[in-house]
Length: 119
Image (cartoon, rainbow, N blue to C red; front, side, top):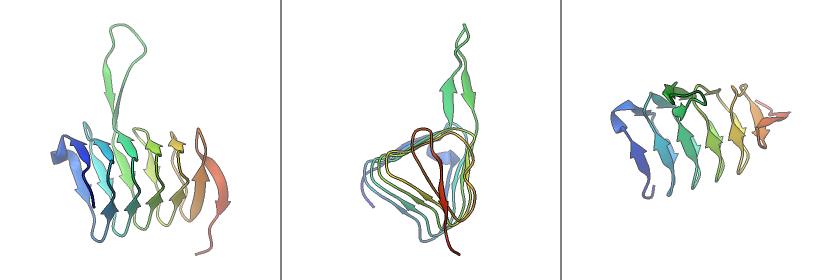
């Protein structure tokens, strides 16, 4: 573990044997659940809020759920309201805006299914 930045740590739940690497930014204006045995690589960002595009601008908040045995590679951004299901991998520098299936490798901007992983 290295230095990480957490906004509103009371909304952060981290499971057992999970590693959060240096430079990670966790915007926990809503709940962030990170399951057991996860790897969060350097400079990953998790954002549970965004500003609306309508005037007046308002904060929109939704939780992020990362289930067990997930690896999020360096530089990836996880957007509000997403669920990353178990045993999945997010490729480096990906932007996750939709839910991620179990046993899958996702990558890109926006992240998309690259391949199913063997169980």
